[in-house]
Length: 299
Image 1 (cartoon, helix red, strand yellow):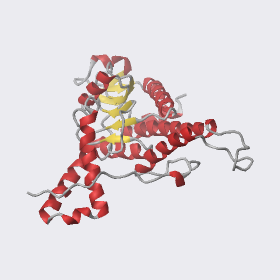
Image 2 (cartoon, rainbow, N blue to C red):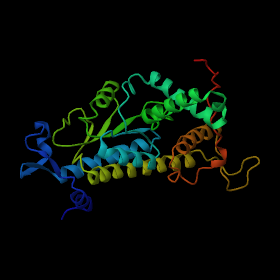
Image 3 (spheres, one colour):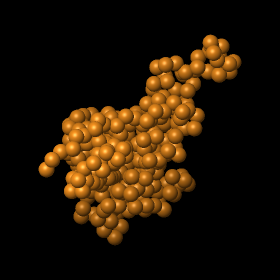
Image 4 (cartoon, rainbow, N blue to C red):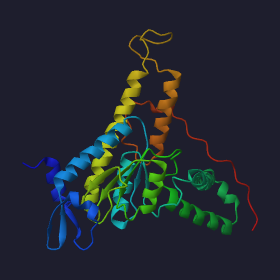
C-alpha cells in the first residue's frame, strides 16, 4: 500500500515531469514511465529522497545552523518566502545577487546600507534631508529591500541551501559548490542531479508540488531548531543549590546565556515570531544597535 506521504505527493502532482523532448538523461533513474509525451516521476524514489533530505536538514537545524531558501521563479516566490519565514530562516526570491556566497563581505556592505537607511527612518533623522534627497533614499531602500530583504540579518554564510529549479538557480548552485555548501533541491526531469547533494525529484513548476516539498522541508527545520533550543536548555542547567537561587531553579552559565541570546535575537528579527520556543526567556533580549548616523550630503 502507498504510504501517506506518497498519497500527498500524488495529490500535489509531484509526479508530473516535463515533456519527453525536454529531459536530462541523468534523471532517468528517477523516471517511472512516460505518458502522453510527459515523463512520470517515480514517487517511491521521491519519497526516499525527500526523507533523506528531511533528515539532513533536521540534523543541521538541530545543531543551530542556518539554511538559506532560494526560489526566484514566479511559482516559487511566495511559497519560499512563507516557509522560510515560518522556519525562521533566510531567503532569496528575487534575482540571485551575484557573489552572495563567494563574495559575502561585499554583499554585507549593501546590507549595512539597507539597515542604515531603515535606522534613519525609524529615528526620524531622514526628515532632515530635502524632499529630493528623501525620495532618493526611499528609492534606494526599496531596491535594497527587494534584493536583500530576506537575508539582511544573515551575518554568516549558510550551512546549506534549499532551492527550487536548479536550472534557473544555476549561479547559486555554482557558488555553493565552489564553497562546498550542501544543496537540497526540488529537481524536475530536465535538470542535472549531479551537482545536488540531496536531490528531490519532482514537479518544480506546479505551486502545489513546490508547496508540499517546501512545507516538508520547513517542518523538519522547525523541529530541528526546537530540539536545539531544548538541548541548550538542558545542557546549560547547573546544580539546583546555587547562591541566590531557589531549589529547583537551574542556573544558566554565562557562555550558554550568550549562545541562547544570539539565537533569540536571530529568530525575533524575522517577521514570523510564532515558531520561537516559548521556553526561551524573551526578557533577556536587547534591541540591536543601528548603524551610525549618516551626514547629510549636498547634491
